[in-house]
Length: 370
Image (cartoon, rainbow, N blue to C red; front, side, top):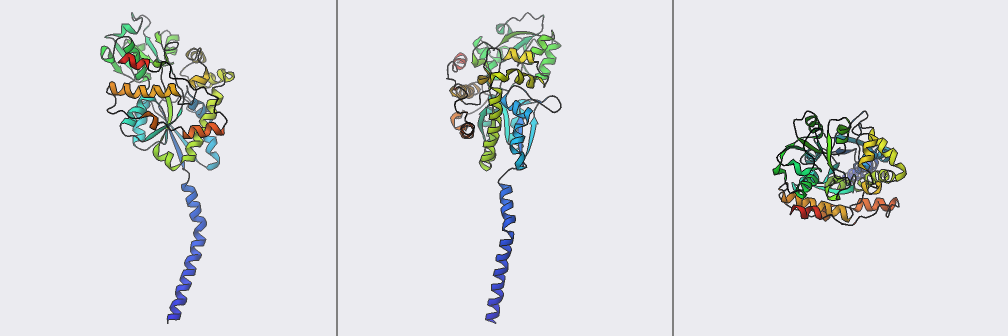
């Protein structure tokens, strides 16, 4: 009986071993599948236009228009999904909070508000930095400068990366938002209200140039040619969860956008870059030329979190805290993760292609507020 039991046990062990060996390829395949995401979800803090949907004004916009990210992951069978938000940065934060995105293209203020509120993210790539702000009024308005805004109905898209430079500009002119009848309107609504004269003025971006050319508005201020503290900053961020689970795929996405930034930063491609962005219909080629006048593409499309841009974000945290947009300050240096960017720069031999801009006048805007 003991011998029979030993024989049965030995047979069972052999059978179990055989099943384990037979199942090894399946287990290995399952492990390999788990090592890569089935889909990469990218949120964009601006609406898209056209069919197929397009965005403009950044190296990520170039990557999106050319399918650079999709091409990077095509052989892996990884799907890339794009989500565009009319509600801009605040709407992206909500999607991040609900774990509906892996990456996001956002401006400084909304991502700072999200981080301060507990969103676990990392800044991994700069894109579309030093974007200009504009102030538009009806053609027959008596408003001639920023100083004339006191007590006026002014549209500001709050919670976006335009709010900080607007507040700095107001501070430099002896005002805060409380000195205005500030109205929180998104881009399309603000332009409609300006056209019908339901508001006295609207702050916005390059798309206000289109209203000017139609004779529906007059531009009374632009940061183009003024201090860079009055410009908008944007970036790509990744959730901590995705970066921890898929560090290699995070690096590859950065690399794909970096290739687009390299192409877009070449002055020989300036006309083609503007033509690509003009396909959205939000601005004409002439408007892009005007917005980028005297500004090198290597500056506007730089992917680097250089001393200047890092100082801008530190300034933004302090500014957001002072204006009670966030309750707690946090450390910018630990939020920025340059590891994926540095690895991609080295792989593509672009270590020294983009100049690292010094801090320069980066603190002057905060000094004005104080």
